[in-house]
Image (cartoon, rainbow, N blue to C red; front, side, top):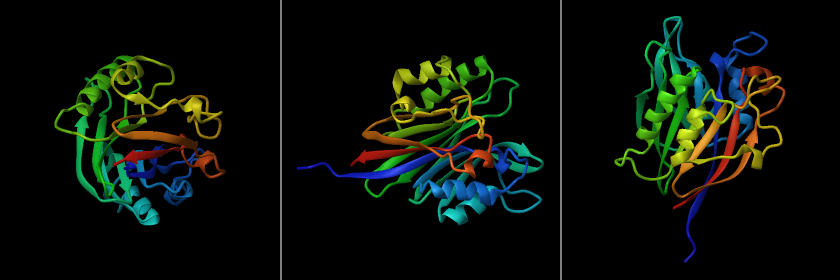
Length: 241
């Protein structure tokens, strides 16, 4: 009997508060960049949430894409919530956030959403690690422990902005226990930062379980080159049920 499976596209994108390299803050432009990739699940970093000046960016992007969403704030930005967001065309059945803050550095977190794909529950971890070496080392160890909590079973994807452009400590720690997507297999240009002239590869995807990454795409349209200081990274994934 042949195995049943489902295919989906997941995107990770640091939207930089929807402030582009032209210094304009345009949520609609970021939403159009994401929509052009036709994703099923989206992990965003550096999103401004609701506050005194009204609704948050996730609400606007979710409405444009027709997706549900959950936000995991890590701090405030000009009295608005600020942090990570996961959007999905499938139901999000559970949501939590893990604190990855190290000492007095900027507050960081790993957001987890459990998504009902219709045949299996996918655990998606949306990550934004720090910029300091020791900070990332600490965060990678905690993240690996959270991901391998024996109470959370099933296929898992860990993705986001890891702020690591070489094979450093965080990459080494995570690669010991997770499959790392080798962007070089799929992309001639794999650098994602800064957007208009990318020099560094900061955005990564890891996974485990009955998943297979079949293709990876880097959003490089005209809007994507200026919409944020990162480029969006999309992966086509096959999930065996």
